[in-house]
Image (cartoon, rainbow, N blue to C red):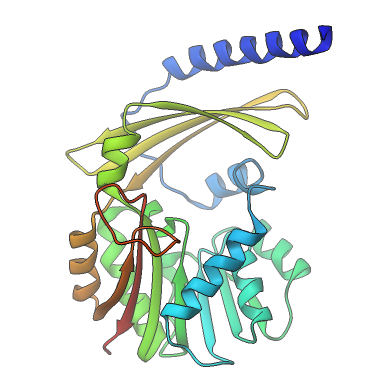
Length: 277
């Protein structure tokens, strides 16, 4: 009982400390993912933070709604820890997965790589394939992590990478949901029995940006880490118009991985679109 009370006091003190730290942060600057930022945040943001059953369900959902044949060629852009890519390879597809960190690509190649699952270091702006893929996926709001003025450029690069009538499946955060449910709030999370994280979310309405700061304590060494991240936010109509401008036709859309219709209450924008080029 004493250990529990001592532990509760420590957590309470840490929370008070993190609340004070977050008060001193300026949200005036923008910070998007680049290689250095990704390398610093990769362990804290990704290690152990996944649900194997949810990943399998997501891959099944994508393949159900994007009509690709067995042994298709798939691009997983901004692949993160490569778990979706690895599952797609297990399903019999030939997968090329890209991300921006040398450290991550080296790790993934050693862990998963074979002749049907390749990893390359590329930013979105460096995607320059020519009508190779039957399906491209961009998940976990990765397209929201690039500046808004690059969004259509990247969509056009994805379009040129796909074969005619090839499929693009994207997952983005839904702006109305964020504004209604998260903007101006703080939230706590505890991950992988290791990180205590305080997040604070701000909304820049003029530029339609989410600005989120995460301050975490790593119980492995009691270090404190801070990350400020800017995300471009979109609503359904805006996203459909942007996809159309890049030669995509939206075939199916969902507000979550359960297949519910999109509404302002939907946390996500899940879009299956087909390439017209």
